[in-house]
Amino acid sequence: MSIHRAKTSTLKLGDIALIGIPFDDHSSFLKGPAKAPLLIIEAIESDSANYFTEDLMDLADHSDVCWLGNAPLQDYFDIESIIAEILKGGAIPFSIGGDHSITYPILRAMSASYPSLSILHFDAHGDLYDSLGGNRHSHASPFARIMEEGLAQSLTQVGIRTLNDYQQTQVSKFGVKVIDMRNWSPDIDLNLSGPVYLSFDMDVLDPAFAPGVSHHEPGGFTTREVLRMIQKLDLNIVGLDLVEYNPDRDLNGITAMTAAKIIKELLAKLLSFQK
Ligand code: MN
Ligand code: MN
Image (cartoon, rainbow, N blue to C red; front, side, top):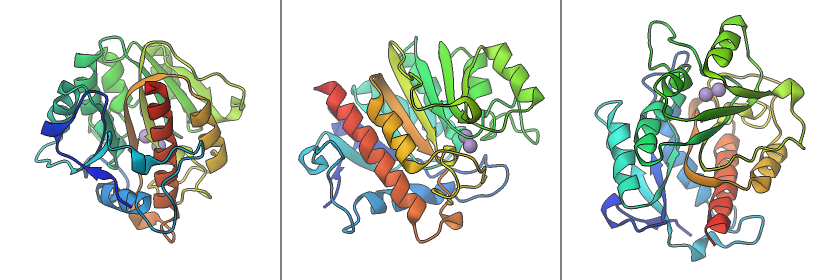
């Protein structure tokens, strides 16, 4: 079984365009996420599992779910133009792999199409540093850039468990809604009105469930808790990313398989919302 292959130029209105972002130049601690996209697609297409989502949707029936391959990148801001191109045809861009710095150029493209976007961000980290190691495009900084440029009208962060004084100041400055791990409960309502961009950092999961990430932060979600949250969402999602899978840290490909599972359930959510 394989995902329908397509080119950006042949996308149709409402297609869900999976695109690999092989980029980790702005990782602060370890490289690796640039290698993520092809391994995650390989996991989705693995013969070890079937193509059904848990609500019995057969993804094999959906030629509107397309894999565009890895984006050809020369420069960080090529990400913006590549996503803009996908949006031009009315497709939903779903970026796979890369470090979290990719979300800033993606949001520059998204906000041009959706001026009043809300962001739902799953992460162990707030990624709100003005800069890290002198790098304002660090993977620890995308949401500082996004909020100061007004690329989204709201930012809701779920699973945070690394706040410090500085990040707390940034949270207040940008009016971020933080649902931190300590205060999380399965009943929390994550539904937002209007168009939503969903950004999923794999390290929101507990490292016991997803060891293949650069920054192991214990005390995170189980895979099942994440799947339940996704399955409960009732949102108009217009763009997504799944970032920070680091294959160099993975064990037996379990994190790639977990990423694949999360992507499948997100696809089920997108497809059911379009019906
Ligand atoms: Mn992150
Ligand atoms: Mn993180």
